[in-house]
Length: 388
Image (tube, rainbow, N blue to C red; front, side, top):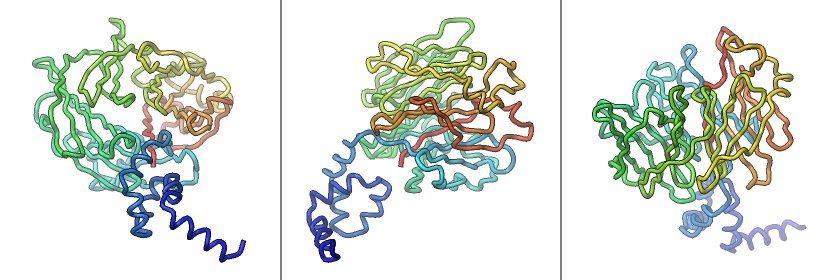
């Protein structure tokens, strides 16, 4: 094809708004921001409400990577590590939480949660400073002071951001007070930039863990915790739009659940799993969409992995017949016609385990403290999935 023909074909595309729109819909969302500057025509197309609606109607967002923040060992207390799941050579968008005063400052900034493209952060010693950060665009919001921060109680916060519904995010807080024994929900909206009390209050149960909330079906979900003295109670979910609180069945929870469990959502599926050190395999449970029950979706055999990585069985805290490993994330990829996989932690390594063909490989190695892998109980390393 001659250069004249190429120019003619390009001109046809550029002059056809419908064809150009179809192309722009398949451009990575991060690049759409820079493409607004190409011309007034492109700016008008990308910011058109109909284009945004079509963009939101595309298949579920693809998780591109995981952020890790290790416990503090030395001066680099605000260090963050990033593992790109599609191209391991992709550099991290940042190495430190640069919006902290100083990465050596003892007032550590911690990642508390992620939801799609955003990270929820707050200071380590208190929740007085709450931040929402978009690593793709380097945008940072500092939330106003919570209206009940000075009250005596325990504050829990969770982030909700669903780009398919709105470009605004919400932060849900739950404040518990011992006297009287009551819990109150508060909602912050990036649209109004204010906190407001929810219409819903709750008499807190000692079994309820208002941490690591999982956003699924337009609701925030929290699990009960294991108790030696009584059966595990039902778990809770909070419908954000309706401000309605309801229960759902708790998954099989063992005494290892606090440090060894994973609870999260991927491609519109809610999962729970935990690795018990003395079991050579574990199950991944999935909740039915009608909340009727949990069922076994996957079963993973740890023996083949431990043969390749014998450090899994060399742990000071367990016997030689135990397995030192933990699930840090589960990534479903059926909507993208790819294999789903688990992200597993073993001492000093993060492994990608293919749930279809059972293959596995190291995708990240991290430096352990001086006392070495034998004294590293897996389960304390948190991962936060992110989309671009």
